[in-house]
Length: 288
Image (cartoon, rainbow, N blue to C red; front, side, top):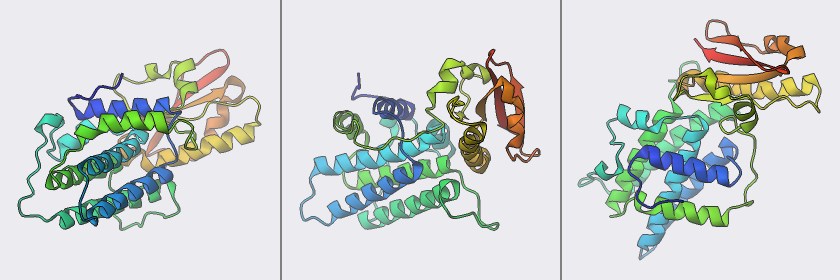
């Protein structure tokens, strides 16, 4: 049941995650990034109309919040913690943004600028653009928190609020978007390893971790390692910046030395062999 009156940013983050899982899972992060750009552009388009419809504005604000929160969820971001870092209230009833001396157009530009920073980070993680050695390494979670702050300010200037429309938009999306988008494997929602092997016991409660796709017995060792390597490579790029606690691998007992094939800097990561089952060994890659 999706309620309209949620109290905290954690409530909304969980609501959005639950709705995405009901739709089948997350899409590629680059697709999510494209949707953020699309939704911000639609906000700008509304500003160009002579008479702005409050419901349409509220719906677009909610769309921007939802899709950016999806990106945060895919990197296991604790938005409560990120909000607290920048002094943004985590209880939605306390979110008041004053924009007395800032124009709506300037607030939109600030939102677009922050969206550009998010794009740059995701392009480093999952795109084709390597990070420059001189470039400051920013946290995606932190930038999404700033992006939300810009969004709340923009909404306030339009005499609207984001949270009045999120639950309604989520309900609409669940009804409309079933089987609409191509769903891809995502390490935050991979059920096989975490459910069948109860991998959540490997970390303390509240830990943030990814899970690699379970071993597929119908494929060769080389094919399985190739798929897993893609997740390991993504994890290496973002684990420290995003504060991830670890990555879980499940490897058949006969292939337990396979983890050695993954290229990991021992000064930055450690591979721990955990108790598995009769068929699988469980490996935990943790940042050090």
